Image 1 (tube, rainbow, N blue to C red):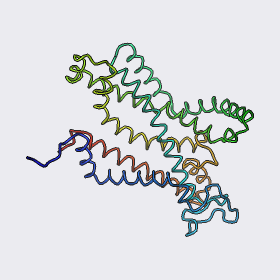
Image 2 (cartoon, rainbow, N blue to C red):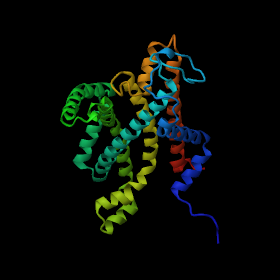
Image 3 (cartoon, rainbow, N blue to C red):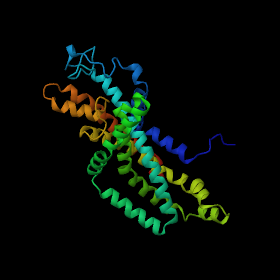
Image 4 (spheres, rainbow, N blue to C red):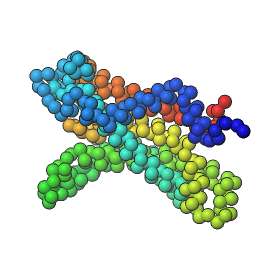
Length: 309
C-alpha cells in the first residue's frame, strides 16, 4: 500500500509556490510588514505624534534610524504607524470591493440575460471614469456633510470620538476606493462563472434538484477561487499604492494620522535639503509593492495547472 498522501489542487499549488523563491520572499516581506503593523505600538521607539522641536530635521542616527521631520517627530515610528494605515485600508477596501464583485459577478455570470448585460455596461462605465476625478468628487461632496453630522453627534453625546477627523478620512477612503476597485473583481468572477456553469458536475447538480444558490455556493464559486486569489493578492498592493497616491494629493488620509502617502508629500517639498524624509516612506512603499507583485506572480504560477511541469 502506497504511503503517499492524496494530492489536491491546493496542496500541489503550495508545493509549487514554495519552489518559487521570489514568491516566498514576497510572502515573507508581506507577513513581516503585517506583523510590524499589528504590533506597531509596542515596538516603535517613540510615539508617532511626539514632537521635539530641538531635534527637528535630524539625519538618520542610532537614536532616530530614519531621522526626524520638521516637527522633531521620529520618522521610523511614523513609517511603522503608516504601515498600519496602509494595511488597514488595503484589507478593508479589498474586502469590500471583493464582496461587491463576487456577488454581482456571480449573479451576472450564472443567470445571464438582461441583468448580465446591465452589469457589464455598468462595470464598463465605472471603469471608464477617471479614478482620481471620482475620488475628488466624492470627497468634496461627502466630507462636509459627514463632518457636520459627526459634530452634531458630539453635541448630543459629548463623546470625543465624534470629533476624531481620522474617522471621516477612513470612511471616505474605504468608500471611494471600494467604488473604483470592485469592477475588475466582478468581471473576473463573471468570466470564471461563465466557464464553469455548464460543466458536467454543475449539470449533474441541477439534475439532482439542487437550488441555484446551493450550486453557486458549493460547486461554482469554489472552482473559481484560484484566479480570484491571485487578483486579491495583486489588489492588496494596488490598494496600498492608491491610498498613498490619494493621501499624497490630499484626498486620502490626512495628517496627523501617519500615511506613507502624506509622508511622501511632506518629504517631497524638502527633499533637496532633507532627503531622508522622502526616501524612508517611499522605499518602504516600493518594497511592499514589489513584494505583492512577486507574491501575485507566484500565486498565478502555482494555481495555474498549465504551469505544472
